[in-house]
Every structure is written in C-alpha cells, then in structure tokens.
Length: 103
Ligand SMILES: [Zn+2]
Image (tube, rainbow, N blue to C red; front, side, top):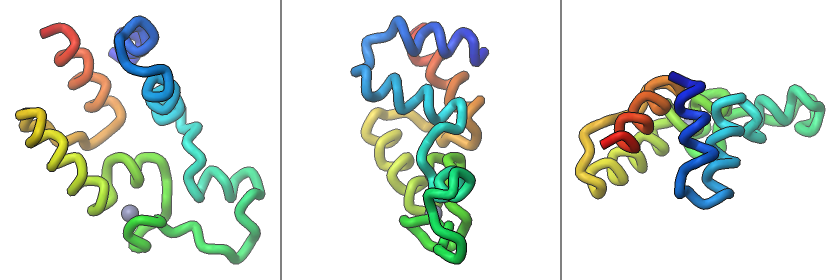
C-alpha cells in the first residue's frame, strides 16, 4: 500500500511542498525535536517535548497523529471535507489517501 501511495504522491496534483512534507513524514525525516536531538541539533538538556501540547515527546507520529492539538485540527479538516476518517498511523493515512484518490 505504501508503494502505491508513494506512486500517487509523486504523480498527484498536490503542490510539491505537500508532496515533500508527506514523503518526509513517511520516512521519518520531519525535523521533530526527537530527530533534531538525534542529530545533536537540540543541545543536551533542552526539552524534546511537543511544541504544541508539551505533554509528550515530539516525534513526527506524535505531531501528525497523536497530539491532542493536531487531532483537533484533523477533526476540523475532515469535518470540513465531509470525511469521517481520523488518522491513527502513517499507514492508515496512506490507505485513506489512496482510497480518496481512487474515488
Ligand atoms: Zn503534542
């Protein structure tokens, strides 16, 4: 499914910055605080908590899927688009995206 999604991603009509962000999310290349700390860009002792909620460690999955703030945004966007889907993993987002494109 992810291969199919990646194919749609590069051949789709989404703006290139959306494609690049999606690709970075799928391959965990988002500059989250955890990834920045892994590259020693966040100094030792600095917080790696989520910038939105400060309740969890900031990973890409947390930022896009599990953060209460992000989930609230997803809910509003999906309601605006008249979808009932709430993403719970990067794979679920891929499956949902492919289903939307194939409609
Ligand atoms: Zn958060």
